[in-house]
Length: 227
Image (cartoon, rainbow, N blue to C red; front, top):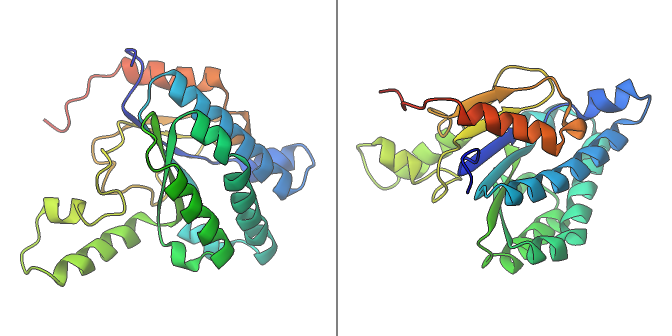
C-alpha cells in the first residue's frame, strides 16, 4: 500500500441522473454509465492497494422514492452486472459483500447476489461492499433490536458487532461525487472519524485522476480520531 492509500474507502456514487440529463440521455443511460465507472474504480482501488471499497448503490430512500420503471431497471442492471462481471472479479481477487435489507429485492436478484458472494468468498485482494436498500439509521435500529434480545446493557462494542458491517474496518475516507456535501444516511455509525472528500464531478465522470486527487487530499490530512 502506498502513502496515498487508506485501507477502506467508501463512496457515495451521486450524479447518474444529472449526467444523463446534461447529455439529453435517458436516466437508464446514466445508470449504465455509472455501472461502467464502478468497474473502473474497482480496478483503480486494487491498483492503489486499497483493501476495502464500500459503494452506496441503492438507498432505502431511493427504493421508496424512485419510479417503478427506474427501480426495475436498476434491479435488472444489478443482476446483469453481477453475472457478467463475475469472472473479472474472480480474476482480480475481489470478494463481494452486501449491506442493507436485501429482502425487499426481487428473488432473482437476491439469488444472483448470493451466488456471487459465495463464489468470490475466498478472495482477499479487495473486499467490495455494496450497499443496497441501505439506510444508516435503519441499520443502527436493527442492531439495537438484535442486542435487546440478548442483553440489557448496551455498549458501543455491542452495537458495532451487530451492524451490517461487522468485521469490516470503519472507512478511513468517504468520497461523495455530484456536488452535494452531506452523508445522506450512509454509514452513520462507521463514519465517526472518517475523512470526507466532496467533488462536483458527477459519478459517471469520476476517473482514475479524480480518485487520485481524493487520495492525495487524504494523504495530506492529520487524523486524530477525536483526540
